[in-house]
Structures are given as structure tokens and as C-alpha cells.
Image (cartoon, rainbow, N blue to C red; front, side, top):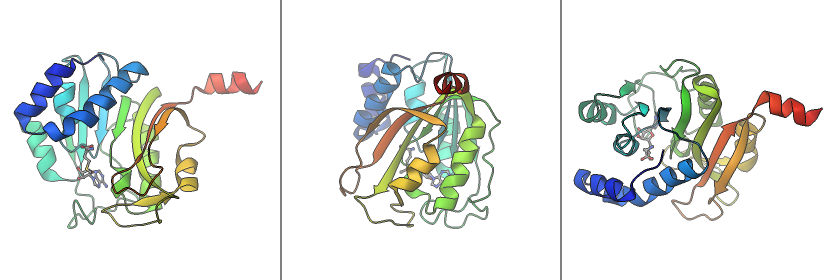
Length: 219
Ligand SMILES: C[S@@+](CC[C@H](N)C(=O)[O-])C[C@H]1O[C@@H](n2cnc3c(N)ncnc32)[C@H](O)[C@@H]1O
């Protein structure tokens, strides 16, 4: 999906989210460059917040599904972009949904299997609190993503940060992160996350490994 940067910029300015333009435009251009998002694709945005639905609306062939534990984000999204599917679950997160009653360690995301060409997890795992929750979300993504789908995911890692289970800024060990993604993802790009800078996340674009290719390489 090739985006018109000027159209995206003026849309974000109109929506009052110009400060999110740079990072969004950067991600969209990388997805285009690496073939992670094409016209007609289905995008599942986990912990969707508010910025990718407007961006996707620039290509009317894209199918977008936004999921969040924050009711306001989902309600606002469904009001402004009724052409998309919006899902809210009352899952507990100490920062974003402290009164939530559903346990994130065992919860199933209300999206059917094998549907996503691209799963976006932008600044989601950096708030998931524990390794058990993160592992459950990884299992859920494996269920939802298509066999050749892509994933955009970001983390705070240790080192260089201290391990932390705070929802404000969750940090996993590098080994935990590699264990969660290794074996099923081919990484096409990793960038950042080398300093303790508060917002410096380790960002990855990966694609589900092709089993056949994997077997062919092994033989
Ligand atoms: C830092 S914001 C990022 C929003 C958006 N992805 C972006 O990049 O602009 C984190 C988002 O994750 C959501 N979130 C927190 N815990 C969650 C959970 N367990 N499941 C799904 N979403 C969650 C929050 O409600 C919030 O919208």
C-alpha cells in the first residue's frame, strides 16, 4: 500500500494528531518497502489507540480491525470509521483499564483465526506487564495471523533497561523476547531499543516463517 505522505500529513493535522504523523508515515513507508501491506489486505491493530485507522482510510480497499481494552478509543474509532470492525474487551491493564475484569493471561482476542495480513502491535507489549500476558498475546497473534502474514511489534528490552512489570513501561529480557518470536517469525527489520531513553523501543517487522521454505533449507 503506497501512501500519499502529503494526504496523510493534512489528515493528521485536521484530526489534531500531527505529533503522530512522523512515526506513522515512517511505519507505513516501511510496510510498503518490505511488502508487508498491500491494497486489499486485512490489518489487525492490537492496542489500536487512534492513529492507524485514519491512515488506513487513505486506501479504501484495506480491511481494518481495531482492538483495544480502552473503551473510549474503540467507541471513537467506530464513530469516525464505521466501515471498519472495532472490538473492545474489558481486559485488565493497570494503566489503561485498571477496572477491567478479564484476565489478560488467559483471555482470547475476539477476532477469528487466520484473518490478518498484517498485525500491528505498536507500543502494546511495552504495556503488557508480565511475560505470561505477553506469551498469551503472542499465541493469540499466531492464531489470528495468516500463514504468510507480517507483524509490526515494539518492545522495551533488557539490556539496556532494567526488567520491569509496570504497565507504564514494561521491559522484558532480550532472551524472553527472542523466545517469543524466534521459531515462527523471520525478521525483516529491527531498529532501535539500544539505549535507556524513555521512548526508545526495539521495533521489529517480521513475517511468519514459511514451513516449506524452512524444511527446504533444512534438507
Ligand atoms: C501507548 S498506546 C499505543 C496506541 C497505538 N498502538 C499507537 O501506536 O498509537 C497503548 C495502547 O494499548 C492498549 N492496551 C493496553 N493494554 C492492552 C491489552 N491488554 N490488550 C489490548 N490493548 C491494550 C491501550 O489501551 C492503548 O490504546
